[in-house]
Length: 246
Image (cartoon, rainbow, N blue to C red; front, side):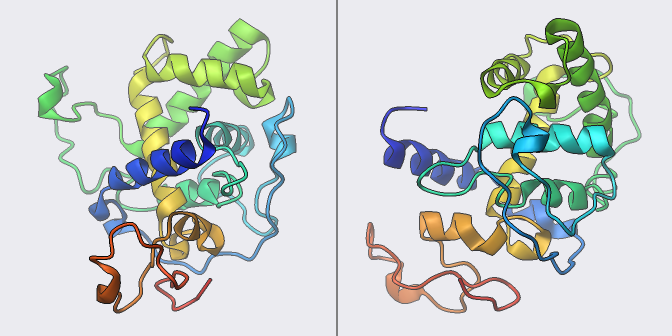
């Protein structure tokens, strides 16, 4: 990240929120989020020890190894700093796990009849793998790569090494069995962004922390008086879909 924390973190996250499609959550199952204590923010050698999951949330899709990977990975994609919480503290792992039970994750909203062939980028996604498959196959393959290369699974690596692995994954420089590396990274990054900025009803954005950080009003019924006040800070805190206020 660049040296200026204000321009770097907020600038990055403002850009990231613009990349989260509004329709992504259309198929989400709406559930009451579990109450939990915030996770820690230290960067030790083992992410699963550094950032404990929500005390009262048990994953429905991910097994223990996958759950440890999700925490370790999203912690490096959006780490905590002085401006706001990281992805783990914001509940992103819970958001991603809950998404795996939606029609979206099963590919129910996609045309999946084939043929499945490598096409030009402008043709969009062409694989036969739905999001659930990308996570299941991708996590197993990346942990196998890390065990072979570093003698430990991804979540047991130190923060700097995890960053190195994620950077190589993003650029497709790691050969994974059954799933393209860059595609797996893109899925993980997109869902991390969505979980960080979603309404808390979906499991992420705990306590509307990301909304407060960027000055987003949330689901307020009317804030038109402030639409044209470019650059002015919004004077009220955000409101969730359930009517909760920060």
